Image (cartoon, rainbow, N blue to C red):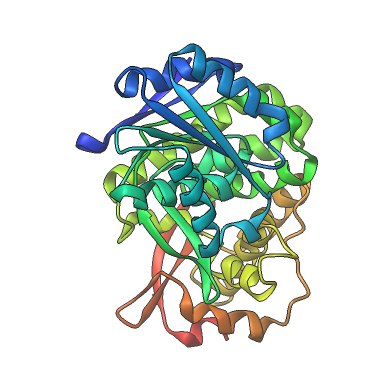
Length: 350
């Protein structure tokens, strides 16, 4: 078992990674609280037929009183009105403040379930069990939980650290190529902002099949990069903004399509290329970065191109959470592996 400790004082927790650990998730969850407490597993309609039974069986075997619920899969579920459905599930299950929520799914379930856990009864323990590549390398780690609002992505949320993150790389084998590619956008992002060697390793592998034998190490390398950043800036006021490379334009693109036509990873891929092209023209990023990123994304099924009208997309950027004191902080690259935060005004995008 590979383990990383996220050091945040009394909010510290472990990220554990091992093939097949989903069938023993109860062994991780049970020691985190008192014996016999209740556990609620929140999942979605795609994950439930594949993994819910295995997770519930393990939790029950560890002595937990388990109930569960599934929501429709997809980004449209991560909206404020879905919280009432989740709160109703919690109430009907009789959860108390001594109980625990397990989020079994991708970023939507992790973000929505984590936000519900953070706000129900003023805060319940929760454990992230991510089942997509995107969630394993990114959204499940760091304590950001949120829902989307009509005005933008993740605008209602909280910082609520999980009690543990349980990563089983075996579940990735059931992902479609589309969902795997979605997660690869975040993996590539980590190489761009912090680890040129990781970027080059991905480029050398060049395909999902060739990367498969090394996916455990790749996932944990991404988690380790995020761990270090989160420990230094838990509340996202400085260095943690680096994790949003490609996300400013990407989130605006998702909003433009009302979170329906384009996936998060595909939007981030477009965003990484777009921000690098702009920065290269302004002399803020080394020439050729956009081309290298586009080439690597293409190898993993991400096009980096979209036909949305550019000016309409950038119109949505004004609602981005990285607006501070009238300046929008964007993440740029000096070069591959070397990201930095750059304050801009509205003219940057033109």
